[in-house]
Image (cartoon, rainbow, N blue to C red; front, side, top):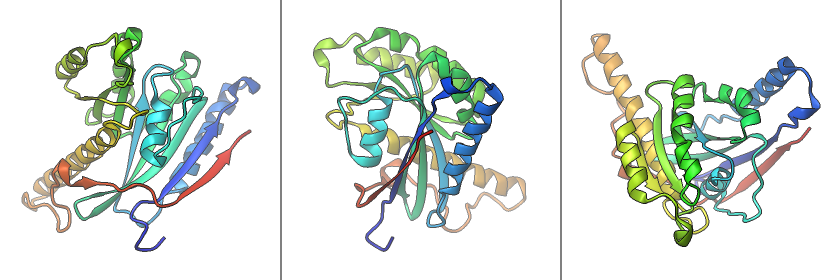
Length: 258
């Protein structure tokens, strides 16, 4: 803590060896316990806590995008997520501190019944495909449908074409991603976790938009309560360009392996 720590990060790796358990009820109870652990990690030094999820096929780069954003790290030997990872990062939106709680859900089909419960309460999502594997792009509509089934209609969704550094292996044109985003009403950009291109922009644009939606809801609530359209003091609408985050100054790890 202290004035130097504008950004503080707690990164936790949650490992779910689900094959060890025959009881589906136990699996859900176990995951619920881990979810509560995340909630208990909330600190009082922020104004808002935003939950967001990363979704998409296995091996599209979700974990590396998360580690790049939260720890400024990239691993070529990154292994598929088993169950769920999550990380925190504090960002500044205007004069407010927002704790972004980012969940990285497994892309494997065998985990779908489990990880779908994590959509609950998500205010934002990065919907990710691999530009070098067309099938991952074709599966985006399936992921989008699932997201919309389990989340709020106000969830902010950013479509992300990852691995833009692999230009020679591209199978999905940037225009295709942009067109799909326009049709579905999503934000869009391409990223490279390896080269750290647009990673910060993807997360911060999502967080900034979530904040904007929140402030608009506060204003509407005030209006419906007869308080006019004035946003409460200290809760002004902030342009996305005012969303800032510096690189982490300290990192702490906590592992949960069973």
